[in-house]
Image (cartoon, rainbow, N blue to C red; front, side, top):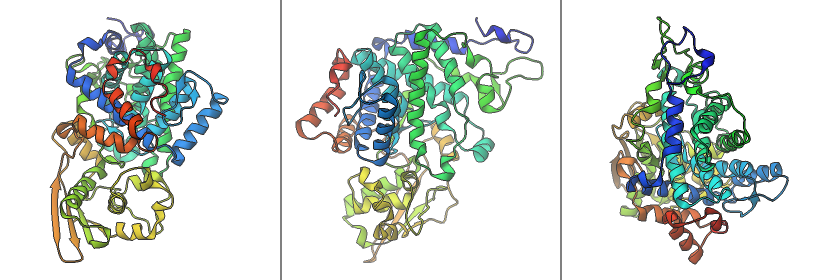
Length: 491
């Protein structure tokens, strides 16, 4: 058993080799060993992530991200094609733009720990295109990315008290979802993957969530920053930087720093559960249980805790046929903390609007076809839409907490039950309840449902035969010999 020699002293009497295990898993994972249902889930996650990136084309966030990447690139040129625009960029700069754009509409996935697809999918695709890898190689890198990312992220999840004080620093551990696919597709051996993980620990951001209070759209750019950093780390390891291994096995290096604990018990032995860090997550069921299968896929371009009420409204509108002018009042119960805000003068950021249940319901009622048009500056300040949003009221139950909801999600106890009551001006009243909306792992969308969503998402870029060709190719990506051959497919 090997561990960092710098800490081979009496402070750590119980050495571990978690980093090596995760590295060997990454290298050893083969497409042929992945169960068919996991392959299918990886493809559908890829399909949706590409779709929501195309849906973001033309938004200020997408345009700014591409401009930043192009300027960093010194103009057009490189071996990677930007989804949507078709611009050629280097891998590092493409990752900045595509990671940002993947999260721009808050429409991708939500695992127990964040939005891994905004890093894993673009980084896997970029590395596969750059290195001329196959579709099977791409799928294998996606699965490896999810399995390693999720375990590292779960090992450092904050306590309730830290969450209350600091927030949920999901973009802190996002970097590991960006490193692993690149390392896998670059053909690193276990020693180099271990090194890349160690550099990821050094480059991980502090686990705070300023965006949750400021509602800044920089939240979306953070996903692009982590993707860029993941590729910069892969490039550095490829060039030969070393001596930064086994970082998960010394709590002072990562888990202890992130969780505020040095990882030692009173006798000097390393603890597998130290303070907030639970190191047993690092190899829990590794190779036998695929955590990618517990990923939630969003049905609507909105925050995770807004999904269910919007889904209920959608079902009621489809069944009862009412419109925005018919609504007297809508009551959401329980309301979720920080998810019911409606400023009198409208919203100043896309993030703020995406986190508002009343706003997203009103946006849906005025335009049932989801997309970037829900979040234009004009619409976010539209007096008519804001007036309707203000008629969406909190119910009488105590506020639900995202923190509590995530604990329920992680413990696989379903999802918080929500009810929506709609009172129409003609006196009719409708009420529906729902917990696991379409896209929740216990109510996952079918391939046909994913395909229908992709047609909506990709419409700003692809139409007609080109759209159907892209859809068919992505659904059978395992048959593609060289991802670089698809450079014109998504633009």
